[in-house]
Image (spheres, rainbow, N blue to C red):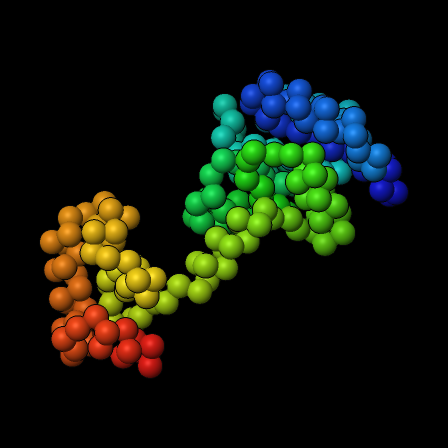
Amino acid sequence: MKTQDLKIIVIEKNEVLSGAYKGYFETFTDYVLAGTYTDVQKALKDFKKTKPDIIVSEIGLQGINGIDAIRLFRKKNRNVQIIMISTINDFDVIKKAFKHGANGYLTKPMTADKLHHALTSVKREGAAMSSDIVKKVVANFHKKSFNLFSERENQIVDYLFKGATYKVIADKLFVTTSTVNFHIQNIYLKLDVNSKSEALTKLERM
């Protein structure tokens, strides 16, 4: 299929933003907007008529959410490409979207350039991500994890490597500073060290 023939549908619950998408596509010469929808059910109902090549869908929708809709659209056409859009850049949500088969993940606010770049990336490479999503994914894969520590202790170790204070760690983990101190003392005990610098040095070697 030629680039000019690629058809896109957008599922966005905010009608004002739906209007913005229509404006974006008026400036695109290589993609056609086949329809805009506020929920998944209507998009599924019109699927045979619109025959989209790429679906751009918000995650937080009424009824069926965008992630759960992926398998439903793939039942209609297993080759359709699907890009998730959301205000959320939480790693667990991102991971869930890709695990369910998303081809892309973009964070709002959306611009014409950002959308066009994503569509072209999916068309050429089969995947698209906002720069902040790429950083989030890379950061999570770079996190250090040690078998001798509990999940909470590993979280604290990660913050220690980032230079966070007890108070910052407590705020991030929604616990008290005394709780953080308790876990850090356990970390020191398991490492057989007496200070933060000794702990970090030993962890780096590990």
